[in-house]
Length: 291
Image (tube, rainbow, N blue to C red; front, side, top):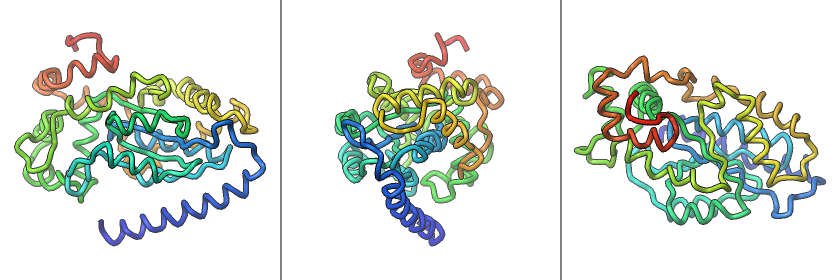
């Protein structure tokens, strides 16, 4: 971590602890829900709208004693070394959270993470995105922005054109020293979140193409668990809508959907179908392999 990143991280933690105190004072007279104030847990696949989901959940800090600590994102892989984390690491992360936290995590469906996240202590959301767009976003992110990422040097210096970078983001790097499998294998560990009704699963695209309905569903999920806030559904919807500002995300690039169609050549389509065509069907982005 660079000195600048260390300063930013320190400031974020100081701001978080200060905010928790302020929120306790602001909402001290508000009755807690039956199972206490939940941890708002935003789960996502990397480059699938993580920061958008953070903005959605952070909006609820305006209605109750919640504090945003989603800057401390749990990642399944260490960005600097590429080392894989596991279910016990995820469980340790969850145990550190406090009631009222707004947290963000790239959780595989490790048994430890699933069992803990489905407890009443948490209010989980899961956001996913068309994996074809994910790999395009991944190329730009690793090549141009994430200079300390484990694969940055390979993408920026070894790979000399976008087509090769896109191919690598689809197929992974099976010969690399750090684990980087193909997009199908990278996405598969997240699919199990779709099978749990306790988790609200939403598409990134719905917030772009049908935001009103997507926000309404997010608010309804919140109100089923948190029924003591004084804000109405309409007021909560307005809070969330006003808090969604994609341009404020440090990793925001275009915020568009279906952008993969501009970059994929026929060879990329065929490679993607081979390693992750079934994932697209499972997620409902395609009905078959004829795309």
